[in-house]
Structures are given as C-alpha cells and as structure tokens.
Image (cartoon, one colour):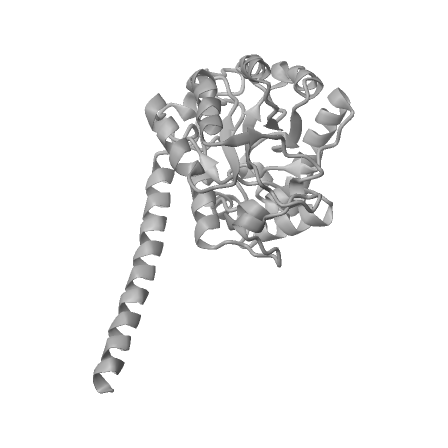
Length: 318
C-alpha cells in the first residue's frame, strides 16, 4: 500500500514538472520570437528599435517605414493554445457545427490578409482571382494613396475587416476611447468607399498581444475587448501562421513549413498573412500556400457576419 502511494506521488510530481516545463518553453519561444520582431509605433516612418529612427520624420518616409513588424502575433497564437477561452462554447472537432447548424464535414481554410491595402494588393487579388478563391482583408487606413483599392477588394467578392485606422499601438492601446475612435475612423473610411460597415475586426498584434502593457494602463485590453463586444463587433485571431510578420524575414521554405505544421490536424484553419509593400515573398508563395491547403483537403471561404461568431470562438479554442 505504501509502495503504491509513493508511485502516485512520483507520478504527480512528474506531471507537474511536465506542465511547468511546457509553459516555460512556450513563453521562452514567445519571448525569443518577440525579440526578433519590431513594432511600428508611428505610421510616419519611425520604427521603434531601428538604428536611425531618430532621424526619420513624417515627411521623410522610408521604404521600411510602414513595414517592420509587431510583438503579439506569435504571443497570440501561443496564448490561445495555452489558455483557451471557452466562453460556454463547446466544440468537439468531429461534431463541429456551422452557423446553419449542420456538421462541418469539409476542412475550411480562411486566408486573411492584415495591414493592407498596399502596392501588393493588386497582385494578391489577381492570384486569388486566378485560383477562384475569396479571402478576408483586415484593412488599415493610414496609407491614403492605397485606399482606393478597398472598393475593388469588395467588388471582387472578398470580405472586409477592420484593423484600425492607424495601427499605432502607442495610440490605440492607451484607452478604450482611443481605440474606439481609431476603429470608428477606419469603419467610416471603409463605409465611404464601399457602403459597408464591417462587424469583424482584428486587433493589431492580436487579442492576446502584450504590447499594450507598454502603452496603456493595466487591464486596458480586457476593457477594450468588452467594449467592442458591447458594440456588436467580433474580433478574429488566427490559428495558423507562416511567419511573414517576424524579423528577420523567413525564407520561402521556412514559411511553407510553418504553414504545413500549422494546419496539421485542423478542420478550420484561419491563416494569418500580411499585405504590405515589403511582403513580396508572401505574394510569391501565395499560389503554393493555396496548393498546400488544397492538397491537405481544405476548401476556402471568407469570414463574414454569418460565421464570424463561430470562427471567433473556434480560434480561441484551437
């Protein structure tokens, strides 16, 4: 009896150590990725962490001004895996139901493009048209010269999402009012171009980003999420990444391998991609991304008002 008790004790200790090790490795990975990532704090060309940021001004916009990336994107996907938000929304993989109540038998991929429009948007649209695929674009508004293509995105049947107007962490994550003002400004811009007010949004850096800890008061992210829900919005994260938002920029093979690992054993894949001037490699490998997803048995769809609540909750658990 005493021997059995000792065995249970050792098993319990082993389980606890494994759990602690798992959490530790997850956070170490998140931290190491974030160190390779730079966030845009100003759409005027000043990039936090860059060696010559002090010399850049709004009137001297460099090519990389809008293009260097963010803490939070790796953190969000890891956080959702470690701490899934259940929200009384039970999902069993084989019994998952669509918004119409039917069981989902097909594997569905949702291609999502953040931070556009850009000089690459037209190329992305052309590839999607050739492939017969519709995607979801989470749009910003500060790149005024590119904004006219938003109407084309909508007219070609793609879904529009709101990614805030400025994408400035040091602005939008300072208060609830600051975030909502920026969100509404982008909503008005999209409405004036298309007549549509999107109810799907994506937080810059994701809903589990840690950047807000540097820019706003404690608990501000929870307050913002509560407010957007009260206003009828649904925020959409992701459960698959290629790594096209990390620095240094990964090579083609690394990005495709990231995709393959990400979609493994998934029936719903919300794929995070980026639509900015510097993401030429993302555009280059987009046909291969589509080919891989098709070979894995995925069909394609957009995120819209009919399925947004389902996808929002699904991604929080996967």
